[in-house]
Length: 173
Image (cartoon, rainbow, N blue to C red; front, top):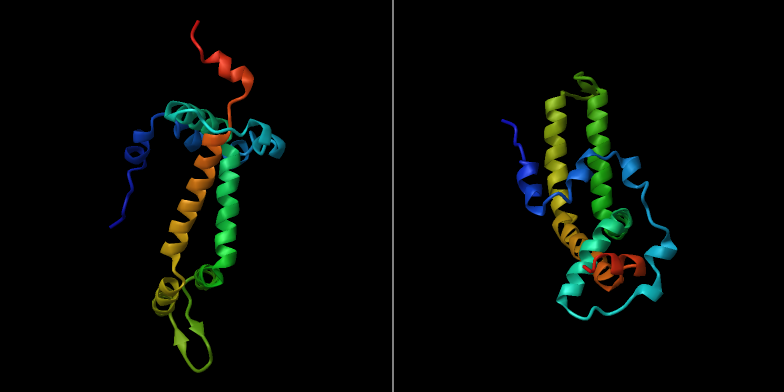
């Protein structure tokens, strides 16, 4: 029995913001990366006057700097894996083991003193990988990653003022 996750039901609550993300390839997704000098422009950092301005800034900056925020997420992901060496080891170990078992093409693994079929190999991997995975604390790492990305992205989006030319285009005459 396959488990299906209704992605449309989850993303429909966010409006049309994620529709473009589903149809883009990875190269076009990062084609609109903004320069670092624009992303970290200290002259445009300011404290918002009220919550309405925070909402306006976040809505604008999430769209404008979306590729930069994706890079921030990737960099924080790499940092979290480098600082949690056990989790990195478990990911590499399980990936290499699944790849190695797949390279057998259904044949038995003969070690000379014992033969193991693929079912036994996957069961052994499960018995070793799950306890190691739990010990590596992936949930704590994922929660840290969500929190660090949220604080970084929404903090930047709330404090980064819109460019002057865009600030006047929203005002009704």
